[in-house]
Image 1 (tube, rainbow over the protein chains, first blue to last red):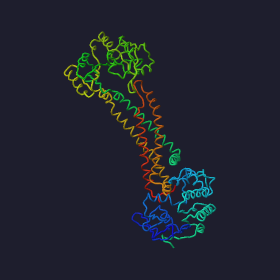
Image 2: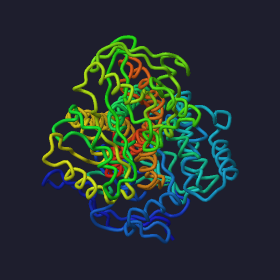
Image 3: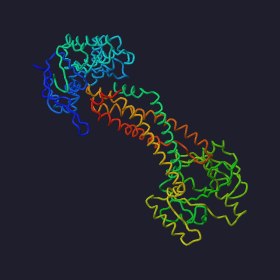
Image 4: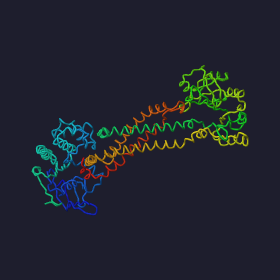
Length: 222
Length: 386
């Protein structure tokens, strides 16, 4: 049984009247608890595919089903609710809100839940403990290193206990040591907390941590 | 609470820009308040006019007098409850810069027709007994440190000669829009002296004031008064007190309209200043909004964040501007020649207008940034360089 089912997905962008195909009829399944890496050269469509699975972009053709939900059939407001409940995002450039502390950044997705302040606090502290930043929770992003910022971003991604964790080049902006720490953390989330992770990367060392590696080239799986 | 905190932190992200925007709004709002106050003070006489009072003046011009003999004839017209009169005296008190209204009045019933001028009974009785007595407003008394029993010497200009008046009463205004800087004295004192020194000018009054029983009858009563004196040597023009007051400011209406327009143009300028700040802020944060959308934050949340910040900046700037309006108007009143504006206060309507304008500006300035934040697709927003 698969957690994510990508069925005949195609995606094109339009520039003026010119159609630019990005993904061409891609199908694959991802079982629960998988750690999947999408690799490929720049412009191969990795991030686009990740965005389609995460419900932040729409395919030109095809379906994406996550669990029991056909993500491609949801409207914008349904997608927003679905993302809030089921997807945790990790970005290459962390994308923390600079005016919020680490604690507040991690708390941000929980504001859309029905949790009380006390419950939110427990969740945030637990998430920050998992990423090893419980002693830095009141630091602002500018007071943290790149690696620490990315760990806060991972804590933010897992704090809602999402079904799926999507990471778009999470080590792309980090030095070797920090990148290794982040990869270990993702690996731990997968093995210890059974998180299903889909990661886009250029880094072969990052790909080594994954169970499955899929290569994309010119919009097709190779 | 979290969203409010985020709004506050976002607003404070670029301190200098926010402070300059707030200062710009504050200065604009205080300028709006000052201009509106000036315009309203011009119209204060109109506001203070009573619906049940009619004014009869010479048909040609206000400066031509009317015969005293008209008094009883007007009083007999149906619908007229009481008729009194007044006469502009002019004169110089201390020096020519000291301006306030000096009026020769009918001491019998002038204060009955003007119930907004509150004179204690004993003072009014003392005023009636003495021919050269006068009553001054409490603002005038305060301005010149005048007390009951003091003598006010004056040099006549319209009515030449040296005049002396003894203060026998100080009136209080019933409300804030009533002028408390007038001086009233007996018309008979003026008339008797004219009979001696300039008999051809005696027996005339400046204008009549009628209190009518039903304000709805004003057109009919006015018509009857004017018909009464048609084809006489002194034809009359009767109108409501409001129209009479408006006639005074008609000559300045173009300037007042311009001032009014400028005050609202200032609101437009504030909107552009704040709009510019909000557009810059939203452009810088487009990626953050995209990130928030990925977490499930909706259009409503973004509208709240952007509009909230815009309204907050506008509200703070406006609050400072309103607070500044009071000293600014006082300062402005201070540099004007005394008596130009008998009343010069910031009116409640000015404050209400400023608050409404602040809210409008706050909302309007956030429209474009909101539109942009909403329309930007998540994937495009995430590609933006922070």
